[in-house]
Length: 244
Image (cartoon, rainbow, N blue to C red):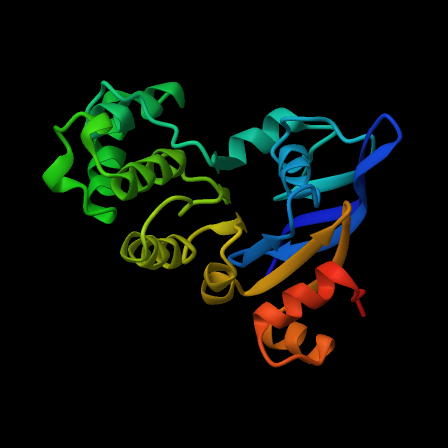
């Protein structure tokens, strides 16, 4: 597989604090990597740099071959972000939200209809396509938000806490959907649900104090920490353990 994201000593400093401290790792095309850590670990800052929302203090990263420091506009064209806050226009219908996003990306009328129809079908939104999005349940709003992020056919998708606030059934439904999306898209997932990361991720990157403490498959992290479960491994790495 080709490399989708290559990060080299990426650093972001605020005053005397390194929010992200010389982080380096790579993500393969088609891989879903879970980015975990306690609050303040540096996950959000790392995502903001990779998605060109904030400039690094030093270091570099390339996304699908384009530099975040040299060609941020090109990077933005190849990625999409589904933020923690559900990004929908509440008074527009499901279809209108998707059409609006297609318009933002400059699609003509024909392509807008093709992509809107495709995503409505993919996300099983047909029963709700004429319904105002503010009347949807939290789970359906999250599905719509992710569908809107995918309308540009991004090579890389950043999912920030995609199931936050959903009940267990809503989370499981969204997990199934994310697995389907992964077939065509490289995904970086941030979540506080350890079970979610364990179920969805090919590899998991655990951060603490702006640094990577461990990275690998669930099984590899369990073996490295010499613990019995992924939850125990996570606790190990964010408390006293170090990357090996």
